[in-house]
Length: 441
Image 1 (cartoon, rainbow, N blue to C red):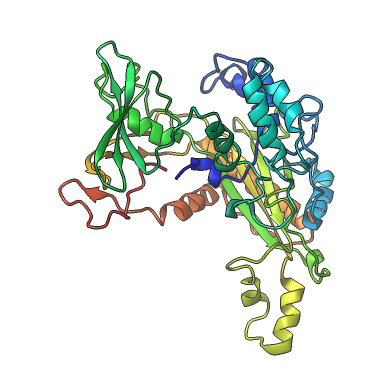
Image 2 (image 1 turned 45 degrees about the vertical axis):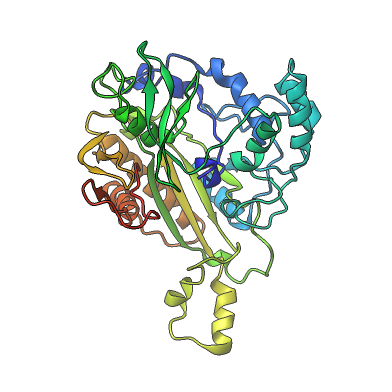
């Protein structure tokens, strides 16, 4: 859809730190980047100013500070956040303001635009006016449900409107790109795509082609493109699709008695996390037994109810009706708190994607098939997450039931794959144009 991933991400906007650019130099695994943090730091500042990121400079190693005046003020921690922070202090787990692409105060559009586009009067005029029209969050809805006041960042509301004002942008939607077209000189000349409404083939020509279709779909397009490399465009190395990585993730939550019977109040906040924990053990990997690290996201409390929000009553008040049910709903709703880990994986030869030799999507484009194997690094990292979360939950007064790293990480994979969509046989296209095989993870 128009805007892609920016429509449904969590707006969590973290920087890579100095250590993240030189992993092989630090632990002998993976690869060092050809650039360093100092090369990209000014662009982090520019991006944060452009999209609007709230947060604070925490001074934690490998969680880089932004330049003064770049970050928006962070929203206050919620009740559960404060309880978690208190527990974290007892065991050395820092809980600081999260960094998210949500406005907490109005933007000074002209000032920011002048800094971002110092030699471009037209950009200053357009962006200065447009930035000033964005309103700060008023703590009402979940960001992922959309934001009519443009407080949160997504390209459809923040970047595309001013780009259209330049008169230099044409947007073609419902276009399923099949391949990049390459000229005799080996350079890209455009893309071949399928109009999803008419189901007809079309071509868009260009002097420069930029693929920004996320990791897996960009890989699929390149593999389906016919260049001078037999196995796909830009694949002379044979590494296209190799060393595929995913976030290492587990979660653990529990009922927290201290959060019961709180007075009714609005705890929706900025539509996402207000606090988080950067990886705080950056020099302890030899002792921990796994390379790389993770950050912690957390949340709970009396936020706007959603499907399943009152499921806690099934266990706490089974068979209860009437006045007692209402009392228990007030008592238990919002008294749960959970932690989620998001960690870095070490690339390995067993994780890669390739074109499926016999399966295509409804547009007749070969789909990717995946090969996957977690290493001991990821399993031990997931184990550390579970034990850390359990310790924090117990200190908050809850009862934790941590899983082993292998069970926790497999549970996450199972919960993801159980809704995998169908793939269509090349010889039997589906009758309905609304069904589609998912091209990647």
